[in-house]
Length: 403
Image (cartoon, rainbow, N blue to C red):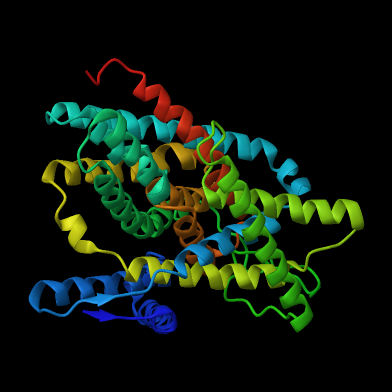
């Protein structure tokens, strides 16, 4: 067993990102289908770890202590960049997209339960292979897995949920690009100058992660302090809500604190956050988190999944791609923004918000910016979806099919 400490894991994650960049740059296929660099680099290392474990006695264990803070830091930057005036301007689109997302939650749970019944499995297993672990992710999957084990007597529910969420994370990063490539052929692309400005004071957004952004040490420290406050206060709020009727995942609380902090400082004292520094730190946190999460995947846990559960997840992936093409894209306007939204929807509909952002970055890096998508997707996928998912799950649990 080779155990890497925190710094060694950070070095490995940095190398994974460089590997992913090199592979995407040198492969016309990966570039054509807009596969995110952290996804391809991390997945390749995970496959290497799987091969070492399968064909030799060598095992590598990465330190996971930085994954949580990096993920929370990313969500803090989303909250700090959320201008309520801009959200109000895009309110109609946000509400419409939330409706589209709600439809997918219902579809995923219906597919999961239906296939479980068809194959003679406990319907609860079908729910675990549906919106709980796919749209909900690892955190929601682990939480509901514990509930299913303690209250419903479902053996290994947490393990099933985590494995399903891991499978979804992989597919969410792989199908978003091909779906977007299929859709952008049918729309008018933004001009080469769209989203660019000669005014250096205008901040760039997450859709341009590779752009050069000039920041000062003072701005960097201020941004770091704001992120730290968001993490600290958000974690404290999440701990206070734990076990109550208003319980929310920690990352949602962190994001919410970021929104209140940035807009509150602007309203009360006129402090304007230096968004470019926030975005640089957000993109760094996002890339490192995805690299660490994917290179640490225990692919042998997926291999141990029962064939029926793998079949459920395969159908869910096909359904996600079809839903993004025929529902998300069409209802959101059948334009370029809708295509980027569809790629993002694949990311968090099967995986998580970081995967959605990485999908959209890969698409916009090749075809042009989409300000609307980067305004709407983070708020829906990181905040509203958890509330909507909890309601949908409880409605399906109320059905008289579990006896």
